[in-house]
Length: 420
Image (cartoon, rainbow, N blue to C red):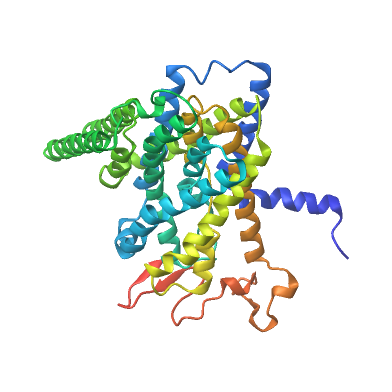
């Protein structure tokens, strides 16, 4: 006999944290809270303030540093060619497809920045939702690297192409987002390089000086405090001058065990703060139809690039991994923060990007659910098997290569084992 509706609701409540990460639930809750607060308080003056622009840029810098800080450098080297193709050609192609769709449907030149804003894959969502047994370790590493490095590329495109969209929309002058130290492309690269060089030099000098001191609790506390202070100062300078590429590259170099907890908490806090702020802006208007079109275009653009372009640069991926990459579009903190940053120069950006983020993530969640438990008519009976713990896996989870398992460890060609 089937379970009663009340029992099913109870089972869903128990399984919800397993299916949806807690931070995503928290972001959804703060989004609703922000909407309710925005209905009660007038926030129209918020986007015009200097504090708002700096705050949005600081949250974005935190998100970018956290995304590259957490990447596995060994995995990056293994598929470097594919990652470079994804974050250069892939980002530009995705942005072009999305922006072209928006221009074709709505005919508004300022929608160019919307295509760029959602072209990236959210690294926080990828980190939270991968490792579910539907991708090989190699594909997971590739998606993680892709998600980490397309963020700064997207931010750079947004900063430097916002000026064109601003002028094409009939405005005079330059948008606020392009007026920092990175006001033009060459100058922006120079200032990013200077910020990175100074941060790395101070990091190296500090570690060298501390290494000569005795390993006692006081010295360890000083080392940890200095590391956090240096990274914090770098993020503030980057936010003041829109130097996001330098921040992203610094995440590959400025690494230490003492920063792990601080970076994790900072990224989580930025994620939650971004959705709270987005709720405040959405309370005064939501563009559902443009947001829906933008979300569908972003999800489809990922499939085109992953299935049509990436096989040219990454060889040997299984069919299931290629499908997973094609359905891997997720949007979150970066899209939200770019929308918040653009809101002052392009009013209504948040009202479109907000529904687009929700649309993309609903499409992603639906596709993953179908892959995990496909409809009965999609399930080949001969390949449905039970795992050792009695859990039934879909055909998508099965691996046919010798020595490769869906979960646990993967045997490498040289006989070493790596954790999946």
